[in-house]
Image (tube, rainbow, N blue to C red; front, side, top):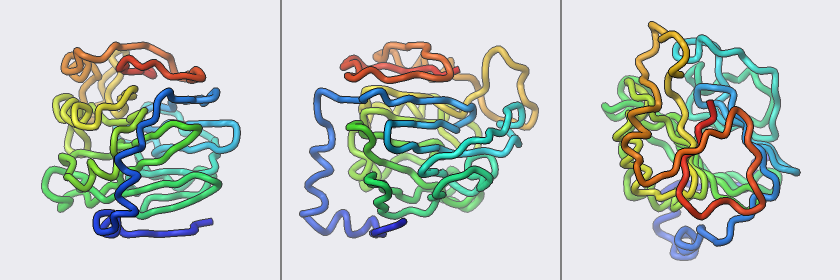
Length: 247
């Protein structure tokens, strides 16, 4: 299934490869009925007419211990790491977790390695940040990110139309202000926050994450829309900057 695997280094030494990075954002954006479904924590299914992509399948442990493990499948699975709450291999689909360049079923994926903690990966190892294009939209998946983005990260990710980013804080993911700083740099049209505790549920003792409210307070320039657990994008996504809450 994998056709190519490129190193991140090659992206910055070949002018032919780096040039398209600066022309990823095309307007207007056509979603063509793309469906986004939230399973909780940082697990999201993005389903189009031809391809489906599942993010961070989980085991019901840690901060995901109150969730129901799903019996679902997807063409491609993008995991941040092999930690059980964001990289469970119990789901059906082609599982990608290692950084690199991939082309599968007509979709191109770029994954880059980033520390999964604030001490250079010495505690929880590395996570993988993902970027791909689906149904005419550019997506970025930073569900397992906690370290500031490097210049190389920013060049690779570009300005995505839709950004999935963890905001709950703790030792493994961004806190509210760190996530807001990343959004300010990447300037996505739509932000979908993940990995935070739900306000209407009892706090999980083993989970060190907060709710989404501090992140929303830090994101005054974005309009907040509550879209539910399943949302179908219109043929043309809004041009105003928005946060989609998928509670």
